[in-house]
Length: 383
Image (cartoon, rainbow, N blue to C red; front, side, top):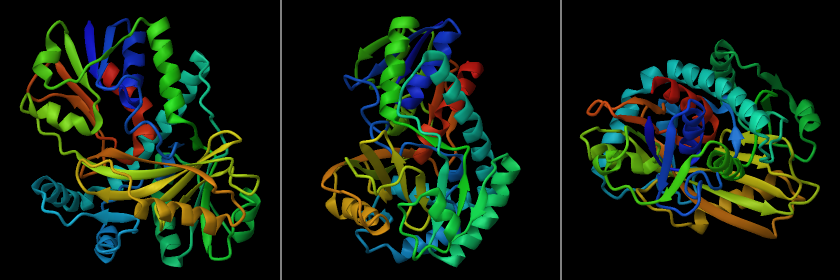
């Protein structure tokens, strides 16, 4: 079949890979000149089954209400009236009862996806600064640690082997970490990290040269136009997916949630190599080779706005300097991107309800890098 994919981020690129391997004639369209220039450009770089817990909980809602007026809070919700946002949050609250099951299913998808990425990288000889040192979750509050113990029971059911570590074990795992205020942590060696942008760029070159996938710079305005000269359209357009779906009468409950990152160039010897996740601050780290450290986090509900605000960037720098006192933060590159988030935190991987020639692979939220290999293979098999 002639299949047109809208979007050249991680979901579009991986979907094209599996479809092309199944001998479909694939074309990718994107308004940007190069692949992975939006949400897939500079994220947290973790492929992380241990970050599968969905956000739907009264605990998170109570915490967000305390942060409502703090401009540098880990989670920031704009008070500007927005009907789309209000409807999204109502659905978010209604999904609280599904949290455990959705966390379980997300973790299963993530574990599967991690294995698929390794297979792709091995078979296609892709170099993307992959580092297999696991992920260490740290906690500075005993209540947070106790909640993590409960979440770990769900992860165990999904098949993720993750174990609790004390302060001395933390120091052995990541010696550069200042752990005076840390009460404990969880560690697993299944998860890994890698540069999402490098992966997308390398795989896109392979798609073009080996699998004859065509890339076209083009702004897709509606799905009807994209179906011309195509047997099928697959929407992998991130935050743009909702508007495209509306053009044929589908309603995708996707809201743009802004995340920030900083890339620290030449962080020095006193910086982490093991990937970290600070559960309280919602901050993650990933080492990208010897000379780069990515630190990412925060969630901002403020509509379709990609402006970089320094009161959102400074907490990332401050976190780095607090937890790694001797780190070099002289050379920093900030970035912000919009995650396509669904209210139940589950990706949309299915067929259109309105048009049998249209499929969706979108809405992965903060786990786009983690889940896309799985969702790409799944949607290719569904097609």
